[in-house]
Length: 251
Image 1 (tube, one colour):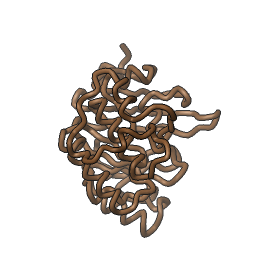
Image 2: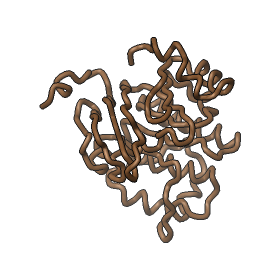
Image 3: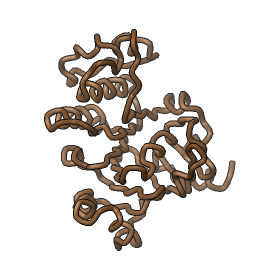
Image 4: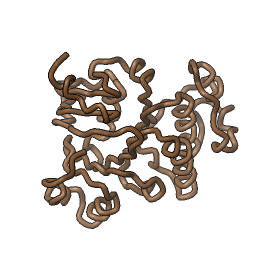
């Protein structure tokens, strides 16, 4: 057991230390550090190409992304080299930005194949989507709903929502946000919300905001509105010069 394992903060659910990751021989993450507490609602903002999705996939264990250095701990366990199926068993579940379409199998039958899948909550409402092929020939709103259903069926401890608000109109955005709040946040699961435009945050009220820029966390702040307003007015480059970065609070 190395020194960092001995010094792990046991009050934290997820800890990322100096994480450096390559994809297709290109350096994407260049020393990412942050921590997430149990039950905490964290939002990760960043421009396209900043490494948000690579970070999400790396936490969930996608072998496509090579960890050059750094460590990942979940619930006081070192999971840096752990395969994705074992991470899922620990309670880490990722809702993909673009989930794969699978023809010939309905969402309902797919859920039946998930061992120990829990009963779906009634708040999901009309579940006609269960009879449709998995992520095939469905609207953007239905695809996001399908992904949330799959996440909830796994009864997670920590949920990563990668651009769950992407491409949604206002009605579907509100519907998806209501499900996330009632079935994930209100049930005290920790959640990392990855978003580009931040529109969904007005419904979810995150407790901590991180900004990823060029493969590094350059800002950490408790008030998501301050960060969003700065980005909308000045762009992400402004975050690099923000005094909150130099004096950011300890996570």
